[in-house]
Length: 183
Image (tube, rainbow, N blue to C red):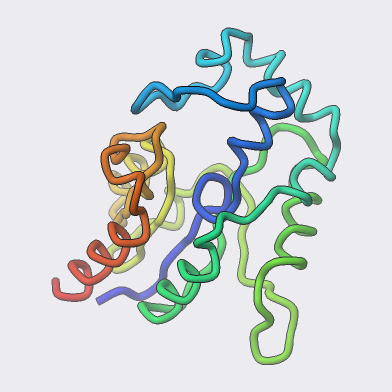
């Protein structure tokens, strides 16, 4: 049984990667399968990568495009269990503000009220326990959550271990949720 689902934003609901690449002047790239490290792929330092994003302020985060599947994913998750958004901010103080603006623009209202079921912080594993599920695109977040006792669905992206399912991530999530429900 699934008690609660924690759903990541960047890379799962929100297209951080395309916006970050565009900001760095990259429109088209053959992403190395399983490689998480954006600065490494771009051949720049972490400082260079993040300073360009940070210079955009909260607008960078507030104006990220939702993935085409984000509504369908929200519906799929909502059918499975109660859920919350669980997102890790960058080190810039403007990042959480931008994420809050994004949530207010794109998340459906609940019971006539603004969506408020979110947590912002990097220590996702602290919420792990049996019957709680994290859906995230980070191999590291997934490993830490699982090690702390939670269940994980690693959302298939080109930059993680599930890259071979990246063409149909919702099918993968649907099957994984069905499997967790049957256990």
